[in-house]
Amino acid sequence: GENVEQHPSTLSVQEGDSAVIKCTYSDSASNYFPWYKQELGKRPQLIIDIRSNVGEKKDQRIAVTLNKTAKHFSLHITETQPEDSAVYFCAAVYSGGGADGLTFGKGTHLIIQP
Amino acid sequence: DGGITQSPKYLFRKEGQNVTLSCEQNLNHDAMYWYRQDPGQGLRLIYYSQIVNDFQKGDIAEGYSVSREKKESFPLTVTSAQKNPTAFYLCASQTAANTGELFFGEGSRLTVL
Image 1 (spheres, rainbow over the protein chains, first blue to last red):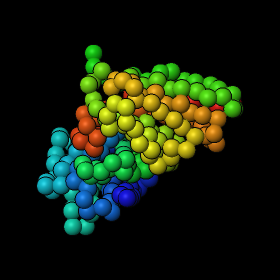
Image 2 (spheres, rainbow over the protein chains, first blue to last red; image 1 turned 120 degrees about the horizontal axis):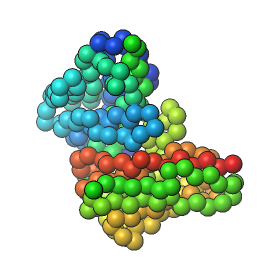
Image 3 (cartoon, rainbow over the protein chains, first blue to last red; image 1 turned 180 degrees about the horizontal axis):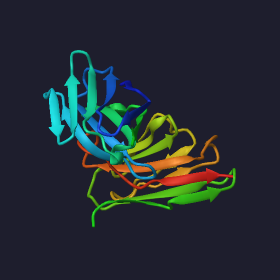
């Protein structure tokens, strides 16, 4: 089945700096890569996603890049703000899969230092 | 107001008791999921259902059971066979399995005393 590795597990950055979270996946059949943000005590929510036919996608301060050859994708947050503090999960999805069609990384705890 | 609702938010039980966590959605989604979240472990799949009257085991199904008798409902029972049941449980739904955004409930925190 699919295996998703996410790094780092904790990331501390100064407010205003950029943050990058990286994920690798093992199954070349995966074709959809969402990122979820979970604030403390709240539910995970989708913040951005990318499909395998696209190399990069941006939404204001957030961007995701995908390298299908190397099987890795990354989340980039620029001009970080206190409200960016949360746990971020990447996932790799194979639309034709069953129970193992969606695999999450273990999460990155992003801390924004004032 | 469309969404996915879990109850109860907090639950305390004694060892050896079965407990059932409720998950209801009014999004008309076919697929529903149960995840367990422990610190540093990410989101681990317990059970999922692609369609009503059908469900499949996930990675950590032992000690858990589910039913999917109605499209909008996917309750999870944590049985006494689950060796370490204290955790945060998240229910999610999706238009169809492995297609697009997962919508999560607010979670249920189970503590076994």
